[in-house]
Image 1 (tube, rainbow, N blue to C red):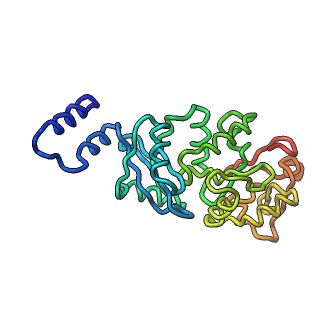
Image 2: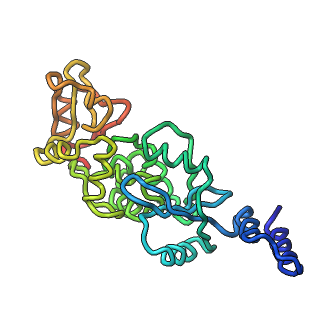
Image 3: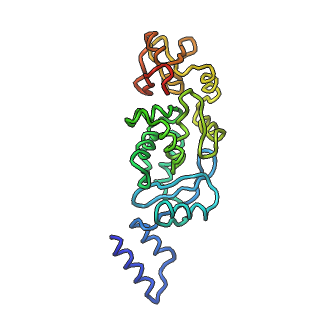
Length: 268
């Protein structure tokens, strides 16, 4: 059924003397992408408003607030309304919760059509950062082929319309400090990272001491401190470095999983 047919069906239903089942018109419009749906679900650190399109996937996710304001801003951004529904489809909700919990899942699909190609690239790359790990803004910039666009990466992440599902909280400053966070500030960022098993205190202490990479003297590989391989390194084999250059000069090679930056000593 295309949009013209959907509109004709809705018009015909409204013209009949018999009353159509409640919500049928919205269901028809939602089925062809003219109306989206939203509901409130439990997020990692509190309730979220999450919107989705039946045809394209998740379109918005933000910490719960004013429902009317959410709907107004949504229509302004997407050019179509979103109706509140009692619950999300079970399969979609399961995919979201698996992502929140760091479990394997192929979804959910995300709809970023209101964004620029650059912003889409930033957010899709951020979705690849593993649960319980962090990467610097400059890592994202390098991975999308725009190594000099670090500030623009930060701006794209600050405007992330699908928070937590797209884990912008896993992107940190180049010096290792966790930095700010649009969905609640540094404290919210700290809370969700710690929920994922990251020792934020240790990250901050290492950043304060200027130590940006962790190496293992048994493998001669260096990583970002939150990398799964770095976290498996025992204390007696752990070596810390201030820069990639320092690690390379000591005979260490970069991890193929977290792919630490290999620029100048203080490259972002």
